[in-house]
Picture 1 (spheres, rainbow, N blue to C red):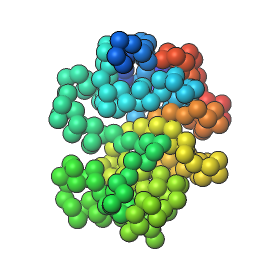
Picture 2: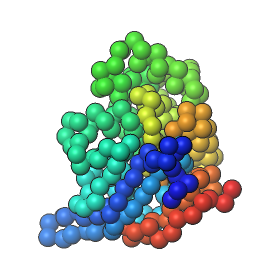
Picture 3: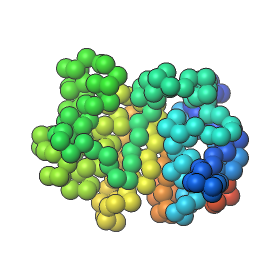
Length: 238
Protein backbone atom coordinates (compact mmCIF):
# COMPACT_ATOMS: atom_id res chain seq x y z
CA UNK A 1 0.00 0.00 0.00
CA UNK A 2 1.54 3.30 -1.11
CA UNK A 3 0.31 5.20 1.95
CA UNK A 4 2.61 3.03 4.08
CA UNK A 5 5.77 4.33 2.43
CA UNK A 6 7.99 6.92 4.08
CA UNK A 7 9.11 10.23 2.54
CA UNK A 8 11.75 8.40 0.51
CA UNK A 9 9.18 6.04 -0.98
CA UNK A 10 10.51 3.07 0.99
CA UNK A 11 8.92 0.68 3.46
CA UNK A 12 10.32 0.18 6.94
CA UNK A 13 9.26 -3.46 6.76
CA UNK A 14 8.02 -5.63 3.91
CA UNK A 15 7.06 -9.30 3.93
CA UNK A 16 6.15 -11.45 0.96
CA UNK A 17 4.66 -14.92 0.70
CA UNK A 18 5.03 -15.93 4.33
CA UNK A 19 4.25 -19.60 4.89
CA UNK A 20 4.68 -21.22 8.29
CA UNK A 21 3.85 -24.74 9.46
CA UNK A 22 4.54 -26.47 12.76
CA UNK A 23 5.11 -30.21 13.04
CA UNK A 24 3.91 -32.05 16.14
CA UNK A 25 4.70 -35.72 15.81
CA UNK A 26 3.21 -36.83 12.51
CA UNK A 27 0.77 -33.95 12.45
CA UNK A 28 1.39 -30.75 10.47
CA UNK A 29 -0.31 -27.58 11.65
CA UNK A 30 -0.57 -24.93 8.95
CA UNK A 31 -0.42 -21.47 10.52
CA UNK A 32 0.46 -18.83 7.90
CA UNK A 33 -0.63 -19.13 4.28
CA UNK A 34 1.10 -16.73 1.90
CA UNK A 35 0.91 -13.53 3.96
CA UNK A 36 2.09 -10.27 2.37
CA UNK A 37 2.61 -7.24 4.61
CA UNK A 38 4.01 -3.72 4.28
CA UNK A 39 4.73 -1.15 6.98
CA UNK A 40 5.79 2.48 6.80
CA UNK A 41 8.22 4.12 9.20
CA UNK A 42 5.57 5.59 11.53
CA UNK A 43 2.56 3.36 10.83
CA UNK A 44 0.28 2.00 13.53
CA UNK A 45 -1.23 -1.27 12.30
CA UNK A 46 -3.61 -3.43 14.30
CA UNK A 47 -3.77 -7.13 13.41
CA UNK A 48 -7.13 -8.47 14.49
CA UNK A 49 -8.12 -12.12 14.66
CA UNK A 50 -9.56 -14.81 16.86
CA UNK A 51 -7.38 -17.09 18.97
CA UNK A 52 -5.51 -19.45 16.64
CA UNK A 53 -5.75 -17.16 13.62
CA UNK A 54 -1.94 -16.88 13.43
CA UNK A 55 -1.44 -13.43 14.95
CA UNK A 56 1.40 -14.38 17.30
CA UNK A 57 3.16 -16.44 14.65
CA UNK A 58 2.95 -13.55 12.19
CA UNK A 59 4.46 -11.14 14.72
CA UNK A 60 7.22 -13.61 15.56
CA UNK A 61 8.11 -13.98 11.88
CA UNK A 62 7.93 -10.22 11.23
CA UNK A 63 10.25 -9.68 14.19
CA UNK A 64 12.75 -12.37 13.28
CA UNK A 65 11.93 -14.52 16.31
CA UNK A 66 10.79 -17.32 14.00
CA UNK A 67 11.73 -18.30 10.45
CA UNK A 68 9.08 -18.84 7.76
CA UNK A 69 9.08 -22.05 5.76
CA UNK A 70 8.73 -19.92 2.65
CA UNK A 71 8.84 -16.21 1.91
CA UNK A 72 10.99 -13.52 3.49
CA UNK A 73 10.93 -10.33 5.54
CA UNK A 74 12.89 -7.21 4.63
CA UNK A 75 13.57 -4.61 7.32
CA UNK A 76 15.06 -1.34 6.08
CA UNK A 77 15.89 -3.27 2.93
CA UNK A 78 17.77 -5.98 4.83
CA UNK A 79 16.60 -9.56 4.25
CA UNK A 80 16.18 -11.59 7.43
CA UNK A 81 17.20 -14.73 5.51
CA UNK A 82 20.53 -13.08 4.72
CA UNK A 83 21.18 -12.34 8.40
CA UNK A 84 20.40 -15.47 10.45
CA UNK A 85 22.04 -16.48 13.73
CA UNK A 86 23.88 -13.92 15.84
CA UNK A 87 23.71 -11.25 13.11
CA UNK A 88 19.92 -11.45 13.13
CA UNK A 89 19.85 -11.39 16.94
CA UNK A 90 21.94 -8.20 17.05
CA UNK A 91 19.87 -6.56 14.32
CA UNK A 92 16.63 -7.50 16.07
CA UNK A 93 17.84 -6.24 19.45
CA UNK A 94 18.79 -2.87 17.94
CA UNK A 95 15.81 -2.30 15.66
CA UNK A 96 12.76 -4.05 17.13
CA UNK A 97 11.12 -3.89 20.55
CA UNK A 98 8.81 -6.69 21.66
CA UNK A 99 5.89 -6.52 24.09
CA UNK A 100 4.15 -9.74 25.09
CA UNK A 101 0.87 -10.57 26.79
CA UNK A 102 2.66 -12.36 29.65
CA UNK A 103 5.17 -9.48 30.23
CA UNK A 104 8.19 -11.88 30.42
CA UNK A 105 9.92 -9.91 33.17
CA UNK A 106 12.70 -11.53 35.19
CA UNK A 107 11.31 -11.97 38.71
CA UNK A 108 14.68 -11.56 40.42
CA UNK A 109 15.33 -8.19 38.74
CA UNK A 110 13.91 -4.81 39.68
CA UNK A 111 11.86 -2.81 37.18
CA UNK A 112 14.95 -0.76 36.36
CA UNK A 113 17.12 -3.84 35.86
CA UNK A 114 14.51 -5.44 33.60
CA UNK A 115 14.40 -2.35 31.40
CA UNK A 116 18.19 -2.18 31.22
CA UNK A 117 18.59 -5.77 30.05
CA UNK A 118 18.35 -5.32 26.23
CA UNK A 119 20.81 -2.41 26.44
CA UNK A 120 23.26 -4.51 28.45
CA UNK A 121 22.89 -7.36 25.95
CA UNK A 122 23.75 -4.87 23.19
CA UNK A 123 26.86 -3.93 25.23
CA UNK A 124 25.94 -0.28 25.42
CA UNK A 125 27.54 1.85 28.11
CA UNK A 126 25.98 0.68 31.41
CA UNK A 127 25.65 4.18 32.88
CA UNK A 128 23.92 5.49 29.77
CA UNK A 129 21.62 2.46 29.68
CA UNK A 130 20.64 3.06 33.31
CA UNK A 131 20.02 6.74 32.59
CA UNK A 132 17.84 5.90 29.59
CA UNK A 133 15.96 3.23 31.55
CA UNK A 134 15.26 5.71 34.34
CA UNK A 135 13.91 8.24 31.85
CA UNK A 136 11.72 5.63 30.17
CA UNK A 137 10.25 4.42 33.47
CA UNK A 138 9.45 8.02 34.33
CA UNK A 139 7.87 8.41 30.90
CA UNK A 140 5.55 5.42 31.46
CA UNK A 141 4.55 6.66 34.91
CA UNK A 142 6.70 4.43 37.13
CA UNK A 143 9.05 7.00 38.65
CA UNK A 144 8.39 5.70 42.16
CA UNK A 145 8.40 1.98 41.28
CA UNK A 146 11.83 1.51 39.71
CA UNK A 147 13.27 -0.57 42.53
CA UNK A 148 10.25 -2.85 42.80
CA UNK A 149 10.38 -6.42 41.53
CA UNK A 150 7.63 -7.75 39.25
CA UNK A 151 5.71 -9.49 42.06
CA UNK A 152 5.40 -6.11 43.79
CA UNK A 153 3.77 -4.53 40.73
CA UNK A 154 0.25 -4.74 39.33
CA UNK A 155 -0.38 -6.24 35.90
CA UNK A 156 -0.66 -2.79 34.36
CA UNK A 157 2.59 -1.69 35.98
CA UNK A 158 4.38 -4.82 34.78
CA UNK A 159 3.21 -4.13 31.24
CA UNK A 160 4.49 -0.55 31.52
CA UNK A 161 7.88 -1.96 32.52
CA UNK A 162 7.72 -4.22 29.45
CA UNK A 163 6.92 -1.21 27.27
CA UNK A 164 9.89 0.71 28.66
CA UNK A 165 12.12 -2.33 28.10
CA UNK A 166 10.97 -2.55 24.47
CA UNK A 167 12.06 1.06 23.94
CA UNK A 168 15.47 0.97 25.65
CA UNK A 169 17.51 0.52 22.44
CA UNK A 170 15.55 3.21 20.55
CA UNK A 171 14.00 0.75 18.06
CA UNK A 172 12.33 1.67 14.80
CA UNK A 173 9.47 -0.75 15.39
CA UNK A 174 7.44 -2.07 18.31
CA UNK A 175 5.68 -5.43 17.95
CA UNK A 176 3.02 -5.90 20.63
CA UNK A 177 1.35 -9.30 20.96
CA UNK A 178 -1.97 -9.02 22.84
CA UNK A 179 -0.44 -6.45 25.25
CA UNK A 180 -3.79 -5.94 27.02
CA UNK A 181 -4.80 -9.61 27.11
CA UNK A 182 -4.00 -10.09 30.81
CA UNK A 183 -5.41 -6.73 31.92
CA UNK A 184 -8.84 -5.51 32.95
CA UNK A 185 -10.66 -3.27 30.47
CA UNK A 186 -9.77 0.03 32.15
CA UNK A 187 -6.07 -0.80 32.50
CA UNK A 188 -6.06 -2.22 28.99
CA UNK A 189 -7.32 1.08 27.57
CA UNK A 190 -4.65 2.95 29.53
CA UNK A 191 -1.89 0.71 28.15
CA UNK A 192 -3.19 1.06 24.60
CA UNK A 193 -3.36 4.84 24.94
CA UNK A 194 0.19 4.86 26.31
CA UNK A 195 1.48 2.83 23.38
CA UNK A 196 -0.23 5.16 20.93
CA UNK A 197 1.17 8.22 22.71
CA UNK A 198 4.72 6.86 22.75
CA UNK A 199 4.47 5.83 19.11
CA UNK A 200 3.61 9.43 18.16
CA UNK A 201 6.15 11.09 20.46
CA UNK A 202 9.03 8.83 19.47
CA UNK A 203 8.08 8.61 15.76
CA UNK A 204 8.25 4.84 15.58
CA UNK A 205 6.10 2.18 13.94
CA UNK A 206 3.75 -0.01 15.95
CA UNK A 207 2.17 -3.34 15.02
CA UNK A 208 -0.29 -4.58 17.63
CA UNK A 209 -1.96 -7.99 17.50
CA UNK A 210 -5.28 -8.22 19.31
CA UNK A 211 -8.66 -9.92 19.39
CA UNK A 212 -10.23 -6.67 20.66
CA UNK A 213 -11.88 -4.78 17.80
CA UNK A 214 -12.00 -1.52 19.77
CA UNK A 215 -8.19 -1.30 19.81
CA UNK A 216 -8.21 -1.28 16.02
CA UNK A 217 -10.18 1.95 16.09
CA UNK A 218 -7.03 3.76 17.21
CA UNK A 219 -4.81 2.39 14.43
CA UNK A 220 -4.02 3.76 10.97
CA UNK A 221 -4.85 0.42 9.39
CA UNK A 222 -6.58 -2.75 10.52
CA UNK A 223 -5.73 -6.18 9.15
CA UNK A 224 -8.13 -9.04 9.73
CA UNK A 225 -6.33 -12.38 9.91
CA UNK A 226 -8.41 -15.53 9.50
CA UNK A 227 -6.88 -19.03 9.50
CA UNK A 228 -3.44 -17.69 8.66
CA UNK A 229 -4.58 -15.54 5.76
CA UNK A 230 -5.27 -11.81 5.49
CA UNK A 231 -8.99 -11.70 4.90
CA UNK A 232 -9.23 -7.92 4.67
CA UNK A 233 -7.18 -4.77 5.19
CA UNK A 234 -8.49 -1.24 5.47
CA UNK A 235 -7.81 2.16 6.97
CA UNK A 236 -9.31 2.33 10.45
CA UNK A 237 -12.44 4.41 10.91
CA UNK A 238 -11.48 7.03 13.46
